[in-house]
Length: 491
Image (cartoon, rainbow, N blue to C red):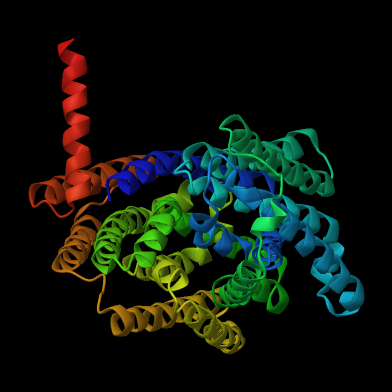
């Protein structure tokens, strides 16, 4: 777990810097520069690009990690594996254009009106994500993560400010958003190049019929899994737009941005854990997989619970200080529901990775498609009843059921699970802290309230966690950091 903890902490530092910028964007820049409808369109275009990138990469992001050990060879530049990845991505682009041309009239009007922005975004995101996963095979995720997250957040904020202060057309904003994502893609590619891990030469002889068949089967299930995942977790933003309005999408997107802070530590941990779990499964080292499973669950839940606690004790003050906060305050309940959904996803940690890189990878597909269908029905039922809160609850229901299914399946197949007593301690500590701060600390000034409540929660949370040694990784990180600081002071 050492390399996982180390790389995760480095990449998470970039991720949380990006999160800070993202929160500043969502709270102060977007709410200042856009009205709710503009913000809704802004987020709709981005989400559509993300969904298309996930589906029309044709499952290659799963293949990149799962099959790299079979291609790994420094002398031959990994037998042209990267060139093969690029060919698949280009094929995905051609397939999308062909399908869109045939089915154009059946696509939603919101999509048709924003087609070129969405298309260019999808291409840029697809290449960025694929090269990011490729770099994770070399345990190089920090710099690629800087481009994928920090640069994108900074660039999007700049786009909004230029639009607001220079009175540009909203189409100009969307074109500049596309440019931001294109720069991110080239940034990751350039980093691979300077690290001498970039080669597009294909070693055709190495791509035997058996290898191609195995890759195609695995990628096919990955493609359908991506479809199911989008239906299960990303459908809400599109159904809110279709069933309500861009304005409601804008409100919903603010809530998504706030809870998105919780999972920034998840992605780097999964990226680093993935190749190691894949290797352990090949060796049938289930005990190592179990160790990663439990430690990842503990550390993710530890950070996730803290972040949700900080968000929720400050929620009223947050909406008091953001520009036009009264327009977005109806999204408070959405934040709580989505935040709880994120916690469920975090406590079950790497379950999808374990299944995805095992011989039982097909299960992810069946569960995702079933839950995708459930999410469609849940949105259709709950949105008319509860507005945007209904969309959030539909997502929560899908995520909870999906993770129950995956965790139960892993326990049956591998006799391992992520749960331990420390998770209960974290939950109880978080609930006690919430009730103490919420009911006993009353401060009128929103800025002072956020500062004092956050310091109080953070201080007690950290001290208790270190005192009872809830996480060995966190305690070790704290001890090493403290020793380094003392060494610097002594010098």
